[in-house]
Length: 461
Ligand SMILES: Cc1cc2nc3c(=O)[nH]c(=O)nc-3n(C[C@H](O)[C@H](O)[C@H](O)COP(=O)(O)OP(=O)(O)OC[C@H]3O[C@@H](n4cnc5c(N)ncnc54)[C@H](O)[C@@H]3O)c2cc1C
Image (cartoon, rainbow, N blue to C red; front, top):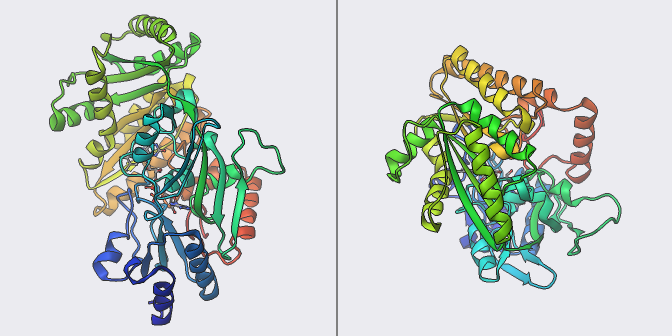
């Protein structure tokens, strides 16, 4: 338990109303988007300014208290679970969009801004910020930066780090450090912006973010294709890219998810389909039209039973709503769900899907597939019951088999969800030992007392 004088000092820093220590409040902050990790904080603070965060960090360092930064808690790697109790530092009350600069094509936001609110503001200005994790209705900008989140649009537009120009970060010592700026080019020394982007709250608290924006594409078409064979759907992704077309999105949804969504939403999805591919093309009207035509040809040549355009914006929106409900559909179907995040080269997708099927049959676990086919990042989700110990051991073996298979195909351990608690047992097999050593040394430079989101990323961290 934290001493009463620490709680008192926190109340002095942020005000009584923004310090939570009642049991039911602490329980609310004891988990995140994962189903198998929990840890109860000793106190939750909801600061509103950088200065307050600096004071909190000074206090935590002085008393050696673990600090877990938190946005909306939607991550699915255990990143915002306070494994050592201590302070949960939740940045949701720092939720101002400070600037949208239409002539420099940049924006400056606080970390607690919800991604969808930001998108709505940009749409009014005809501007566009592409990274689109499918938790966009709730996730915060700080969380997306700390996770270097991806999403469907990353096929064409890249991931979060490609849009972060500058950051203000409060270090564990309380020092407020600024890295990067608001220029689209910046070659001034080592680039620390991408280091903090994706650092999973282990190096400092992100308090201000400068982002690059782009103009909203003039036109967009949504295409839908149905396949009776999942591997054919995988192969067609490579054919589209091989034809020199980079769609904005290529998403993969398997039969389980189609049926679950249809059960809940009744939007007329074909429940007998083995796979549905959802594809968006965007750009100028003429380019979009010719790309859509060519993709429809490729889908049919590649074995699609149905390949067609969404008939209007309403139908397109329904498809994408169904897609974004995908994880909820999976997570609500079992007590324990592990949404794996391995990523493979895009020309190995078909083999990847086939090998997942083999792993599923061998392990006895159904493996559900949903995700970003255009990035080689289709999430295999494995469901079980965390109260059954035998099942859990088998689950670990199955996840290891999935990871080893992805590595054999030239893939990687995490495409977008991060390592957190969920994947750290496999990190040493995914990275060069020298790279791990360098990362740990970087961590020690910024966080010598290891109070900043400890236990994440590395074993024995
Ligand atoms: C339904 C669903 C769909 C999803 N789809 C996608 C997807 O398509 N692509 C994808 O990449 N992810 C996806 N995710 C994962 C998740 O939503 C993202 O990682 C999201 O960006 C996390 O934002 P958050 O505000 O919830 O952060 P949290 O979960 O609260 O925190 C995430 C990490 O960031 C750290 N952190 C939070 N705020 C700060 C800060 N201010 N400074 C420093 N560190 C901080 C935390 O310590 C933690 O390690 C999905 C999750 C769900 C539940």
